[in-house]
Length: 295
Image 1 (cartoon, rainbow, N blue to C red):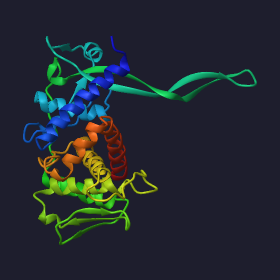
Image 2 (cartoon, rainbow, N blue to C red; image 1 turned 120 degrees about the vertical axis):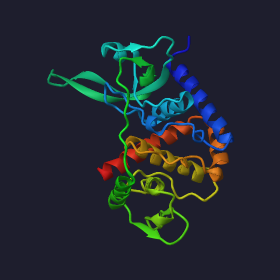
Image 3 (cartoon, rainbow, N blue to C red; image 1 turned 135 degrees about the horizontal axis):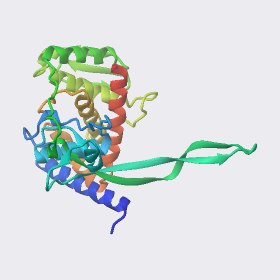
Image 4 (cartoon, rainbow, N blue to C red; image 1 turned 90 degrees about the vertical axis):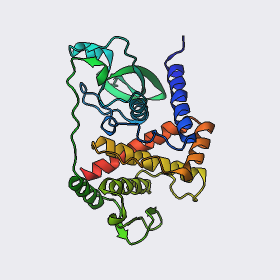
């Protein structure tokens, strides 16, 4: 029987395989086949939001299974909460990495002290969760809706909280210039709607988090190179994670119009499946920084 590490790596390969197959068709999340309300996976018992690879894994499952409920719980949480798991329900594997441990050390004076120490080699474990639609007795999920005016107010607040200047100009490109540390966007009136404007703003602010003194990523890459494409994946995932964490309705264009990058993403993931999980980890850092500034 495979151990935890082997089981998690096997599941990672399966997830990357699914994403590559979608990319080969021209998208990551199948167009118009997912419910936006279910794209913010969270645990109603612990009140946590699933992060990184687990977040993307549960988003993909929501698309595949057409879930409309973003809530996920372990079997033990379901039982302890007085609910019941529907017969035949199948759980989704989530991974948990452990990077430190608590230990008791003896001081020179003989007293003992508890310390948290970093592990020389991280340990991995896994657990399974079930969607709220698989749980009997759990109240139906009702997503909060945000109107267009609220979304544009949010965009203005993100612009005010930006760590670099953001300029709207009458041109047709959006970009972050790392040399000048500035974001340039087309006029908001040229976007399909407010949600699309906010999505692009967050994407470019995601790039800006990579500057030195912030998250220090390698962001000065030549257009068309694999490194350039992988930074685009990080910014796009970061934008997606921010929007889902804030409970926003995601534009259908997310991930569906990136033909310039899909081939590079496919090549990078085939060469190294773990690149997706590094991108998810970076996207988590991006989203946490942007939301931290916004709040």
